[in-house]
Structures are given as structure tokens and as C-alpha cells.
View 1 (spheres, rainbow, N blue to C red):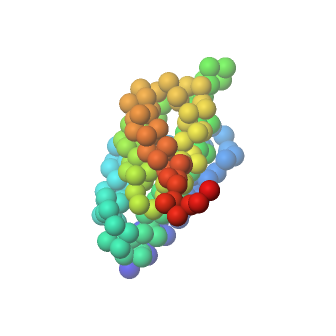
View 2 (cartoon, rainbow, N blue to C red; view 1 turned 90 degrees about the vertical axis):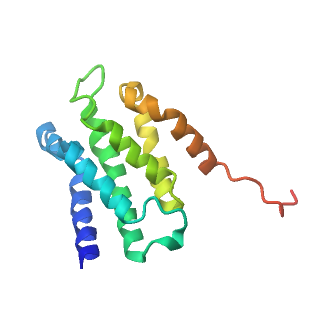
View 3 (tube, rainbow, N blue to C red; view 1 turned 30 degrees about the vertical axis):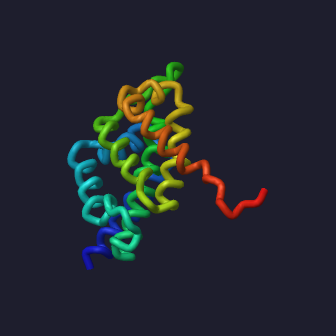
Length: 166
């Protein structure tokens, strides 16, 4: 019952995070999810669901489904809310949201997970941060950049198979 409720709750949050329209004030309300308590809850929920497990068989099917949706929520928040609300030099926005560092740390946990789905979600979202003129200057992002680059490179380049004859 708790698994089902958690999954439904994250589904509702994804619907909110996917909103691309509305006034800046409406969209800024979604950034309440970047406050300290929600970020702690996301990380605790991810850890409790097995985010730090090394083998795929170590977590239940329900926990894995929840982790996938939580990853989708966090990447959607980044791409659809953080990027447009951050602003640009020509059109200032709200700037770096509170707890952007812990948010990135949580994304990194999904990036290094064994799940190709979660890796792909994070890898697909990161260019929106790296292409943004102000986000790429964030001290929090710069702190994690070496890890992001190292892990992403390993994920994107598949080593040749010893059975390849080409």
C-alpha cells in the first residue's frame, strides 16, 4: 500500500513539473520542491527504495518502478522548471534555486546507478544545464562537473566486444 501511494505521489509531482506554461509566479511555486525538506525527502525515499544498491536484483520491482519515476521527476524539474526560471543575462530570472547542490548530488546517484533507464534520463537532461549560459557557471555544477563528465563518458562509450571481428 505504501509503495502504491509513493508511486502515485511522485506521478502527481511529475505532472506539476511537466508544466511548461503559466506565469513565472505559477512556475516559481513548483520550486518549493527545491527547499531543504523536500530535497531531503527525495534523497531518503531514493535511498530507502534501493538507489544505493549495486545489483539490480537487490531491489523489488515496486521500488525500482518508484526509483524510475523519481528520477523522471528530478530530471523533469531540471529541464522544464530550473532551466527556464534561472534566467539569462538578457532576461534575469530567479537564479540558482536553493539546494541546487543536493539536487545535483541526487542526480549523480541516479547517474551512477546500474539502471540504463535512469542513466539515460540524467544524461539526456544534463546538456540543458551545460548549454545554459548561467547554469554552467554555477559553483554547484562546477563542483560536480568532473564526476558528471567521467561517468557520462563511460556510459556513452561502449567498450568493444572481444567477439567483434571488425
